Length: 112
Length: 112
Image (tube, rainbow over all chains, first blue to last red; front, side, top):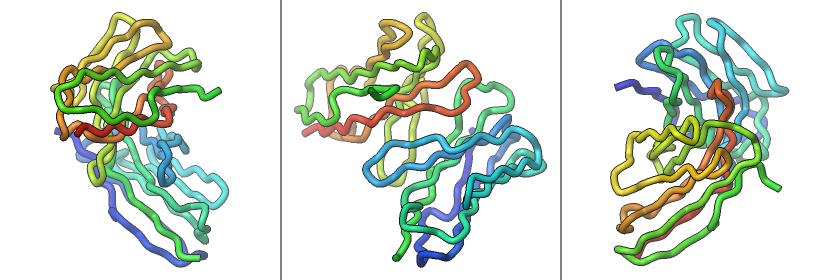
């Protein structure tokens, strides 16, 4: 079946270092969405990318959608302790946009 | 008030008991979802509903049932709870495009 693989599973960085998480789909996606879940919290929507090769920025966060619409990345520049949490990607099925296919998430820990 | 409200926030129940988790939303969205989150397994879809008359099974619907009482209300029932249903349960909503899910704060369920 369709899968979205997300790597790495865990990442531990020093405050100020950069961080990147990657998502790869086995099939072409109609869109990719990114969510952040703080420890003890619920997933919160960050952004949606729809176009091939699309790049969007939110302050220190940069989101990319691959040319083939099968992969995506989230890059955080100069991490802060407030970035701690789990980042999930979720892909929309190009053939049937009725459900999202979720990655397992990347847990980010930031040492102050 | 939160856009998506889940009750209860925490629940401990005994094996074999029937339990209902409730979700209500003020977003005016037609689409509602129930997810289960377990450590290391990400978010798994239990049931979803695209309108009051549309109910669909997700990837792990066995042992669960749902009711869409109104556009704003979507409840999840465990007919006979078992210990491996111990998990964090999230309700979510989205608009017709499925873009940007809004999650509730979750229900932490423990079955003993």
